[in-house]
Length: 420
Ligand code: ASP
Ligand code: MG
Image 1 (tube, helix red, strand yellow):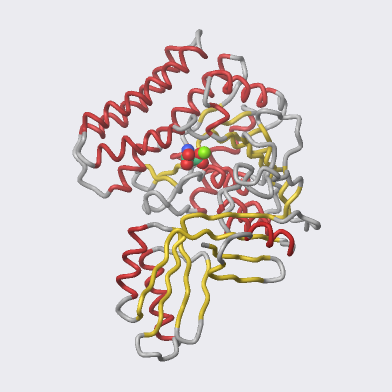
Image 2 (cartoon, rainbow, N blue to C red):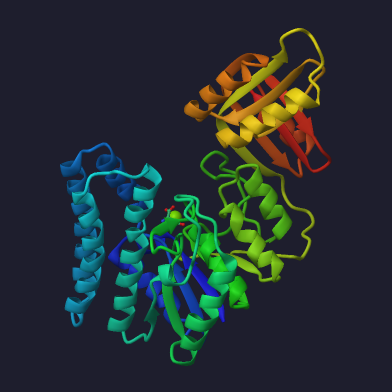
């Protein structure tokens, strides 16, 4: 069997849903487990609902949610004519779940409400697509993934309970394939043992798909995107970016680590562990081969470029000119852990430490305040971090031209340059 994941852009209009359905149809006779994201920008829209609700703006929250409802109901109206009543009822059950909650007052933490509300995006999109497939005579089984994927209650970044989830997949999903070739379910969401909804972090459905691929020993996983393939750079920043046909798991993990927005960083491990190839393909042009990610080493890759803007450099120096030794270093790493901040680049000197972070103002302020107990703290903002894997001297020259280099680190594979 194969695992497919369709992103939000693949179903953001009636035409796109029809297109996605044609792709699914072309795999007739094969067993597919299909994960579908929330439609278009629904997750962002739902985040606004959560904000309004949590700030006590109940009317705004309901109004914003109404827009999400209407978008789905309108799509349904264009897609489904025969069994529309049944399809609409299913959507309405999810609407009601959220609306009940919106009529309450927030008494728990923000992240809890976030997950209870935002999870409906994928429930709505998948039930819509499942109904449309039925309408088209394509037999499929829709599942609420919250009955399968068990997590802890670390809301918004929930941790998977693999043991429970594997068991559930084996008892509740595997047998379904004797009756259905196509199973449709959600990514990104799960539930606690108390039946509270949870989410796995933004863009988490690539990871969900990999969890299923791992447990079901899938032949492969395909992520259907609106790009032709994984590229060596963001084409919006670098018009000469090129497609890459093949990558190793290791390369993708490295790319994600340095900030390339290719695939959710947690996706690779469950696939690598069972040696399941990951395909990235274009739903706009399914004829194209896309990119294959596997355990095969790939040689002669073009320079892979990742640009991270809005970087902050924090220089921490000892207050009395003493060496920065294990103790202050240890304390600093404890601060990183408790504030949940990770440097993108670090360099240690005799009496100072340099750390570069994404500019998440609140966290940076917290860290600066805590660090000021033991160090003198200096901060510079608005820097850009350039990472090039498989660099060439020429590439470094072109990309750093006219910039002031604040910090540079180099290994035989990777160069990182922090620039002003
Ligand atoms: N819908 C969620 C998001 O946009 C999860 C996903 O698509 O992977 O982040
Ligand atoms: Mg998405």
